[in-house]
Image 1 (cartoon, rainbow, N blue to C red):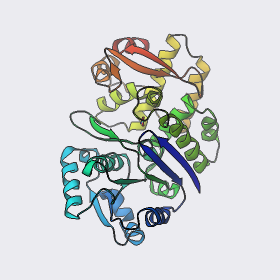
Image 2: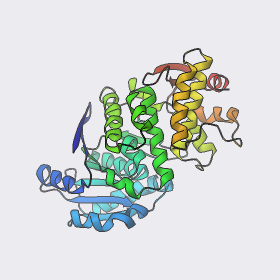
Image 3: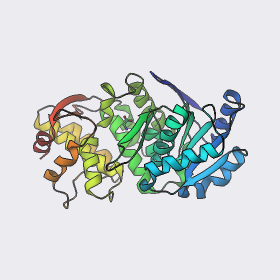
Length: 343
Ligand code: GLY
């Protein structure tokens, strides 16, 4: 077992990395909140796989499965879940567990943060992407016209990272999570790149290093006023490409292309050697992640979507480049300048 503590300005998260660790969550609850009621919210896909196991470990808990898919991350779902919590007479010191991928932890974290102004929240991510990103660092969200428009910063008190869940993960989703790990290798810890290049992946070490890299950043800047923006490497173009593809591309595939475009921007500004781009491309190739913008997407058309990015201030976007593996620099550029530089 490995434990990372993420201390933020809004409370601490304990992050347990433990194979078959669900009973450790139950022990943690018994020790810290012995009187609390527990509700577990998952989605229909994950529920089919793990409902029985959840029931065994949390025999007194309510277990609910929301419809799987990004479409569930909406205001109506918040209302429905809050009504369920009210029906069960749950209060602030009762416990809400979000058990699933990023859609589930974004939505359930949001509900936990606003129900009675905040109840105890535990995240149990089941996808690689959620383990290394969505469930770490307290971002919660639901979608309005665009993705993640309503949200809060509300770190889970406990996050269980259980590598055993990765065994049931479809290959494409696993690779999508690897893209976020490449982001940490590119900007924060180049030793993660060495791990990813090994013939046999040491997934526990990769999880530990990636989560530690993110925790070190979030502990300095929970609310993303400054240094946390580094975590958006590849995401400015990536989010726009993901939307333009009508979500045909996974998040990881879209941000992989976004990272390659960030390298083009860096090189056109004379801020990156070609070798750094080659090192990243080697990783994209190994994990069958795309590095070219699909031909049906015109890069000029990304401008209007990029202007809606949450990181826009005035007409400038805080844009991240990686001058070399494991290093980052923040630039202030407009969407038009970025598109010109990415060609
Ligand atoms: N996914 C980027 C962040 O948590 O800041």
